Length: 426
Image 1: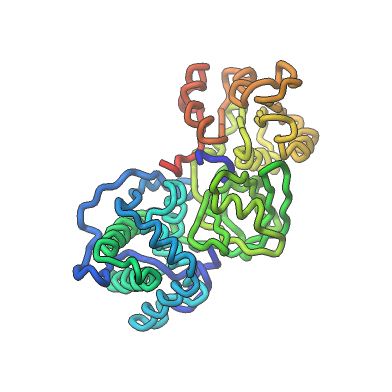
Image 2: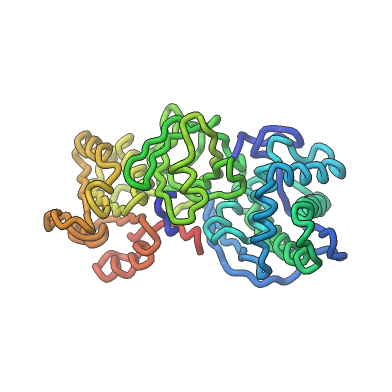
């Protein structure tokens, strides 16, 4: 998702289409630990909020495992194709046809990263959304979970022969238990549909320093609403999912525009900005989020406040209104450090010129030449345009979003008119 506080077609059972098959509801046994485990075992967790679809709220629990599983997962990921083959072979020996070969790497790597706790909370929530949807796509039974758990542990153990110990096996057991519990609970509420959509990158534009605009075409239409976010995975880094918001309202040709800023040590963002090219594949997970969706009742004008690539979901809202104007006037404040960093200026100018109800206001936080009306961070400039009766939608980097609610309330914006991004990282 664009600067938020930072896949496959419908699966067929057994060997069907990707996105279908895969994971869970389980209670696996673990090789080398000499005990079985059950999701009913009490575990300590922290809350991650995941909201899936326009009306369904999902409060899920998952946290990183206390044992340091990172090195053992890194060794496994370095040979992910071989490890995934071990995983599939183990599953197929006991339950032939349970998983499709084409999906083995995605399923294995997503489950492994989730169980290993190697991602940040937002990344784990994205993986959880994918696995929970996969769970609903294939109603797996508890005995299937035993097989999947054993298979994953067998694959990780094989890639870590020199370091494999009973303590490490127990750590993976705990991680799998936590992952399984979270997936089972989320699966009850995430809704039906594919776990992921396979997509092709059709355009890649380096729009500014460290920022890329990608246009991707899913093989099947992605049923999202403007303001939502989707998990995105580069298949070259399987299992690593990150949230990005489409920057456009749904189009007749089904293409989706993603705005990506490369962040330090960002496995996915760096690959999307510097690594992918037109013709390359991506995976898109199920659309999630409700907090930025437009109220269908056009009683209040809109003040949209964007910083950085947080512009993406708010531009999608503008496009939604452009397709069906309802009388609301919209002020969009687009924040950047300097004019060179306001990467989507041309599109914003076109939208403003085409629609008399739209006013676009740039905000420059580090430009000495900016005029008084444009000088300051996005929220500071936006508050100058608050007219007392607008709905305020805001999206930007975590540090901006963290203090935004208090600043808006202090400025007199009613709490029920403040709309901030879904807290996928909490």
